Image (tube, rainbow, N blue to C red):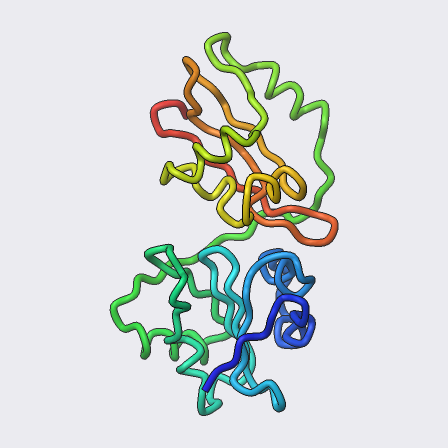
Length: 204
């Protein structure tokens, strides 16, 4: 049997994930976004965190209910896939046993510092061809993004347009009045954001 741990108690699962610096884990353990589960709220032998479409697994992969953690998908989970990020090879083997048809690939990390070169970024923005312009994601673009597959993750982790405008930020690149790319806060955590970047192929 597995038990969901509400975000306000997310710090209870933090010790399982001390091995990682993933900001998507911090989003949950710090109480901002995501969901978490454990096999036993009294003993806490294993845990999972689901933020967006990323599912992190940690703790004792041999625990009696570890497979249930891997197999369980929340009934209100609307994304047609889950990207599992196991803590170790033991968890990886368990994922493969529970979901034998899943695809496996390597995810590469990039630098996680938040020291942006403002002058360089302003140079990129200023170098846009004349037919393109930048527009901040407002209520209208929030609603648009939710209905467009390639752009949905610009705003999908926020509960509403008001929530996004209060806690998130982002810009779309407009071409002929239509968004063709952008960058935004996929998720938030204390002191930072996880950045989502998407551009339609024909405009890259």
